[in-house]
Length: 198
View 1 (cartoon, rainbow, N blue to C red):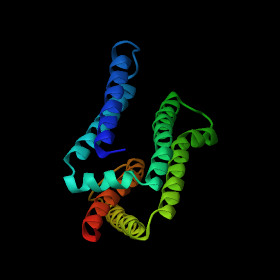
View 2: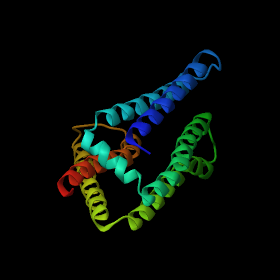
View 3: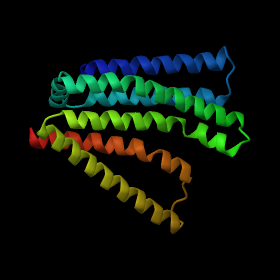
């Protein structure tokens, strides 16, 4: 699968989310927060497509070559169902919690539904890491290390600012954004390290 094909998949998913938001607004009469969530999903995928469009040509070429390798193809085949499951479980979890669940243990289980998909993603990523060659493994592990350290530093600094009453951010929102921020910093670090090593 090429980067350009990924970009078009992101666009199609975004258009599907826009269609769901529009149907929810004018035909199904969904609450505003549900319509807003699907609109936000569409915006996120469109932003992802734009970022894929703007990456340098050398990176697209490298990714296209990398995606042609057997380990990468297996990784992608595992990844798509996981990401679809993540999106659906996140939507279901948020929707069920907003309906109101009295039992705290049941509410906790419903809230943690998307974590299953993230755990499956991590398992697929570790399997991919074991299957690639040594240079690519070095790039991947250094990228993961850099992302972990930088995001930990930002999170720690944010905690200190929160304690000093310089910022006031809801803890739940900040915690939810840790994993996406890790993924973003990992991607940037991987691009820089790939340019350095290859």
